[in-house]
Image (cartoon, rainbow, N blue to C red; front, side, top):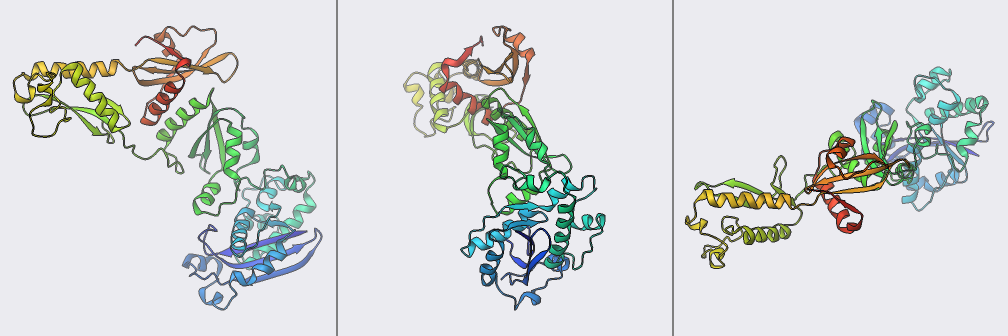
Length: 457
């Protein structure tokens, strides 16, 4: 009925580590009914620190069977049994990964004696196997060897069977139980408290530091999706081991969750968020004064710690805008780097350039038109509100874009008029903008023009 398992490995995750020892105790709920143990040749060197921890050396496993040689036997012992281990997902992920490679599909119900012992024996300072054995007077020999640790886990499980007055074991075996897939150190109540609403969630490590920020249309559903599946990769296994608690913040809409997630990633710089940490390769208009005193307007790739007078996504978009400014404000295409050839200025031929490139127009007059062009570009950007559902029926969410810039967002009572922008700002939280947020809001505005509330610029 039960297969109580312990393994030793060359590393901490199944996709790169290998098994060096396996111990399986079959148990009927009353007594041990069978036992299997063997060293395993991992086919790779065992790291020195692992050898020091387990005592298993390269020489000891040199003549041991490869896992493929024992795979059929291991699968037959585990198949149809309830798989039990201390930190069950670690042992299960390794054996499932190795068996899958050998053509055997392991699908077992699981019980974790770490999570169960917290329920059956509450109040202990630590639930590591060594500390539990000391607290419960369980003798343990050959610590950090598969047979020794599995034997101690057998005795721990027997004590839990006898002390389980609240039915924790049967509850854990229930098909709807979260125990089988929750991260080892995450109490179930954190997941039970999650709302099924849009918002942002935070995974915290043992010290309370945020290690991951995510957004969701449905927080509960999205969070639980992180814990399902059986990826054996190092990053996922390390990620799950470091989750000790969850906090969240509700938002009225999924759009607000996207925005808040981006803000929080840049504020907290969590360990496991990667997508929005990259420096974004965007473009912008930059100005500088040349040696003759002429103000130059140039398109440059946006770099960190630089602030363009206007930003955009595509180079072609910038060229089109620059051509419009050159025509409307009679700027010089050479001084704007749109014409780079030594040929005569195309702007003078088209009568849009007044000769600044040939010093026929004084810098002060030309520079004034450059500044007017920049002011026009900035003032022409839209100002609008996005009003949508709030976190509760009595409020509505509000996002404010002002002259093409993201001002902030928040919630306002449904009975408050939103025509007064100055008053509205008192009700909103101002946030720093970034390229991701601007692109998000521009895309939303283009696709939902009828839902925007225009406000004076």
